[in-house]
Image (cartoon, rainbow, N blue to C red; front, side, top):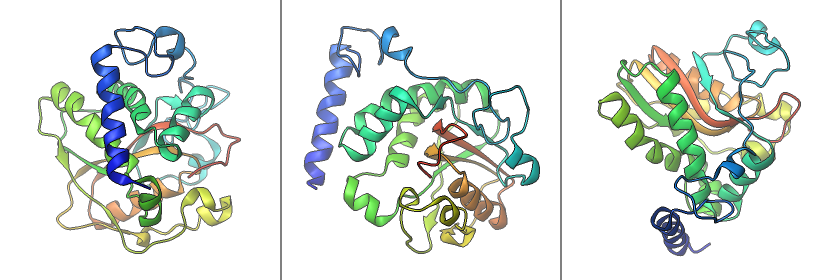
Length: 246
């Protein structure tokens, strides 16, 4: 992959849509990043587990998994369901050199975080680190891009410095989407290295949550290192019956 060319292409596309004020999906003239018609095709995650944000079919506070296995993180903020247009946009962003499509999705995430996250706390913002092989294949880290896109709206809303904190991988392992469900759940907190000193409050950013094994392992590593509270921020959550991703 031509990484410099990819970066140039992303910049050109974002510049075009920002300056020309066109919908990122259908390309019609529009003041926002998405026109109303396209935005209607993004399924909002409204009936959900209050802990892991798993989409639910009934108004139950906790899903079965969170009732029996309380997670290391405080809660998950994931405004969209991974289906339909949301699924197509994330897939194209990660695997078809269309990273600019993360921008309108991140705008929705930012608005939800501003509404639901206690911005009076001194949050540090970290990401689930992308593996070296995935980074070479894609040419960019999607979670780092999401964090960069969140910086300005969160800083403006909170009036605080947007503090960055980086977690790294202790060793490489196959990408989660290449593993079966059982192997995904074997992911250990030892996969992640947390540098000292650790902040009290951490927002851990991921693009997509499926089994929750990655965010649980990373959150557990943060808690064992001394972090007081971890909140997960993700673009989307897969429906309960799905096992497609991480």
